[in-house]
Image 1 (tube, helix red, strand yellow):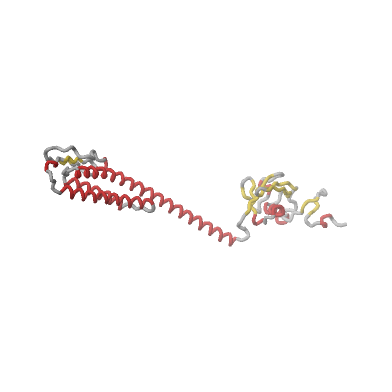
Image 2 (image 1 turned 180 degrees about the vertical axis):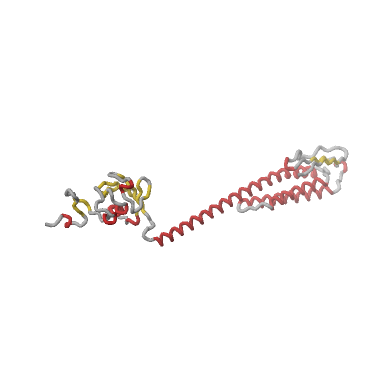
Length: 279
């Protein structure tokens, strides 16, 4: 009479009469007995499966059993146990796998059986990572440069605002018939030119470049206005009684201007120049 295993080559009779699934990996494992069968819970995506496998089998053999459950080839499987990926040659019992243990199966898109292809993919991946890092560094550098440009433009704008108040005061005085000392126009023009040089030294792109260009036009407009006021101031007055004294008091430019409006008119002509050193 034939042995029951002849009915199905996938099964074998163990000592004691137990009928179990044949262990094709027994030869590869180098042992004749891979231990009793244990139940393993397999999680693959949203699905859960149960497999029965000899306790002393390898994870490589487990992949073959899992393939029959989920249809994923062993070379495309990654088996994680206790959060760590297991190699095909590792044994279940040595890794601590017991009856009713749980393993997680992930899809491995890179086949370990194609090292040349794997190296190609790894090379591409490293190249992409390096390229992304370089792009990130360039973007970070651009953001830093743009931030510095905005800050530098804002500092110039603040100084130009102070000069704008001074130019406005000169305009009111000249239009009102007050004669202004020529040095007043020269000093104001020089300070405006210094701000223009600062703007020219700022490297800017995008929105910062637009703001810098607008500030340059603003400084140039004030400079042109000063030239016109200087020309009007040099013309003789039709009524000499309108000639008044003008006191020009300058402080260090960075600390602001103390007064932006001309002093009241008087009946005599007196020009007083109280200049402090310009830093």
